[in-house]
Length: 162
Image (cartoon, one colour):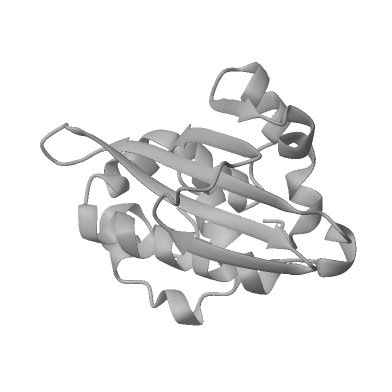
């Protein structure tokens, strides 16, 4: 474990607002996929983590890299809850006119690309601890729509390095 943060108890006790993206990346790097999956079974904690990660996307967006890009990206994060029922959380990232707007839930708009992955893969990806191309090749990341856009998404965000 990293910096004394381990398992659901350690992550649950985090004040996400005070954790920098670099610290978060370090924490995720210190967790195995199995540990992340266990943490994500706590529905309230899972919702808090996802809300914080997506909440930071707008702040970590690099408008100069996006230029004139106009794209709606739909994220489907899958997992299992404590009763081992499958859960899916949907967020959308709308990049347009040099801005990035993030919202929870599915809109009626047609996304340019949809990314589907499990909790562990999502956290590893957004924390800079996984390569999206490798994840795609290993079928840990499913892409529907513009595959080229999906492959280059990381260049539009300031992704921390652990």
